Image (cartoon, rainbow, N blue to C red):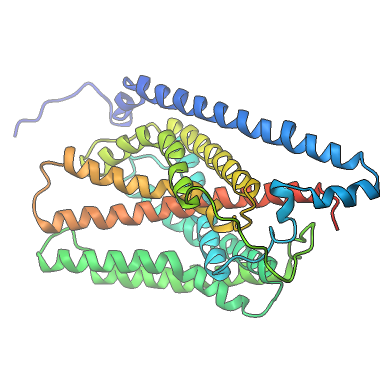
Length: 393
């Protein structure tokens, strides 16, 4: 080994990455995302201003007798007014997943924002991961609040909120802990130096049950004390039969995930390269812009899909709005498989492949929860706004 004295000063050793010589591809990604957003925004604009506003104006101009007659001739989304806020199946699981999604999305936004301003620089080894874990722990209070308040809104019952809050605190961390423990056993069996020491597992468990769980329960306490969201229309006692569709609605839901994935995949390539090929990722400003664009695309896609389902008298929109944007997690996992086959050819051995697949599943699940929550909350606001404008008793 021969050491050569460099003219670069130690504090300036990261300046080569700050020049962003390959910034053109990032700008191309952002431009591509803006085109998708503009297209979807045009569709949402048409839905709100031309279709919905026109129908509501026409309805409000009629007298009571004409309104009663018009009620018999209603079509599309107006027909499901008595079922649109009927509690979905597995409402408890939906509340838990939305709570975890809020926690993960909040952690991602704050972490990337801090990294963009230079507070979590790659120059400080481990600071990014440590910051993410701490933010996730303390955002448990927000996850508990959202999940418990949503549960109370869906069921109208305040009992069992402790169970909801505790499950929120254990759902995603439990899955992550199970995957990491399994992968760590594989590393121990192969006598790898990359295996985590047993003491670190006890530290993670202590952080989980001494910080995250109590804060999530505290957030659930605030959520149960808050007023549940009031529905603008009453729900009928007997559920309306959903008409048979020409094509499976879940096919449309899965296809909707391609648009958010198109916003994400270029930055995803650079992130995967930094994780698995040792390349330094330093363009957190671009990543933050892409994250904001991803949130907008997820919201628009979910609103458009929800409106399309309501127009064909399908009032079971809850889970579909979640997976319309959350299905991007499936495409992230499929991209991870493609990256494994074509870009990680030097990866050898079943243990290495298992490690890669385990971490990819965990990443895809986190992305699904975060993006699905964005889509669900936006669709919930859209449906609430839509039917609060309709004066039907």
